[in-house]
Image (cartoon, rainbow, N blue to C red; front, side):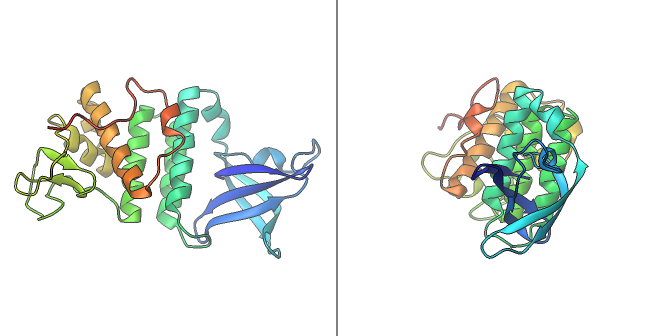
Length: 243
């Protein structure tokens, strides 16, 4: 479940990311009452099996089964909570039109929430891995091992968001960023799930990879994610200095 907001005195409108039907918005009647039979299961970060009855404008929730209770562990830690909020906001933005299948995005979102709930890895790396893989689902994955413009094999030192990622010296546009050595290697490792590689990188390299990843996503979304500035990081999301 992605988010919810109040409707009337006792109801809520909930937004779900489903495997087969993508984004679905439905009314959960009476869930704000203390005697609601499934109100506690309809919370953000919940992985649920929900039954819906087709309505005139919005479906109506009739039954809810909890599959994974991620919320308790996530909301207990502010850093994990804000990171999980960024995951859900990204998932909703990338899901596109309502009722469009989103099998891979749904799987990635559940996996990211599970990793955050279990505190399996550093939350910054979990988020960046999710963002890169989610962009791949949307067709926005930045070029990392070849030039985004001419496909010349890398490695390349420059990165330009509008160009599509890494760029060679011949294609490098004005204003391209020059990340430190290892930054694009880390982004590639996060995308592939090579977690052993991530243990060897410095904090500076990790920060720069986060900045490039966030900048690339928000350029394609054409707007900033509201939740990113809230995330606790040793440095905020930003592009590395240009050269």
